[in-house]
Image (cartoon, rainbow, N blue to C red):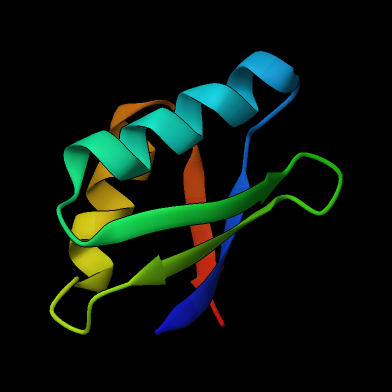
Length: 70
């Protein structure tokens, strides 16, 4: 299922790559489709068993904030 993660705190291209790597390597079942610095979001395709708390934990561990999931 595709979800849009609203992420605050990214400021550059390195941040985009950092977030993309963290989501795909630290959470089994997540495939990152796109991370947009301009839109402050990540579009992901993920298994139904991936929890919001797991996403939030990984995003916060790398220094960003999960503002919501659409």
